[in-house]
Image (spheres, rainbow, N blue to C red):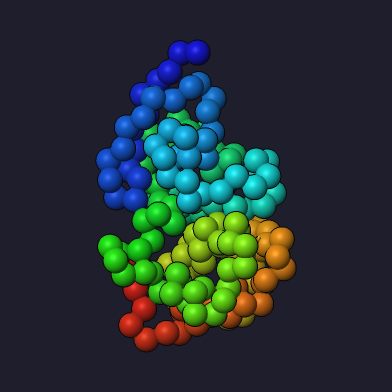
Length: 160
Ligand code: FES
Ligand code: FES
């Protein structure tokens, strides 16, 4: 199959990869450039495990045609930490035992990141709504919501 060159920014780094026509972004991230933080859950837009930010907006990478991110900024949980320092959301998830099996966690973190970027002081309902597209099969929603609220209210938090 003929491949085409795709250039975009991944977590702040210029990235180039050859992609098959019709390839989805999740596949390109995981297999093409080796960022396996977005997870393959359902592959059909139902679980949120593959969530990433594209130009700051939350998207399901399994439903995103890879070619559409040409020249754009893609962010995944691989880029959340600032060097050795974890993002406030990551710290809060660890401190609050908000990850059980952890499979949904990257998608949850990206949904939470998108929420806090637009609404730094969300209500509990805001958080529940923001992660409503993210399925946790371990049914750990309460600790996840608590962790996101803790990150939002914590001192010394670092968003962005
Ligand atoms: S893998 Fe994309 S929504 Fe489930
Ligand atoms: S922690 Fe297991 S699916 Fe969410």
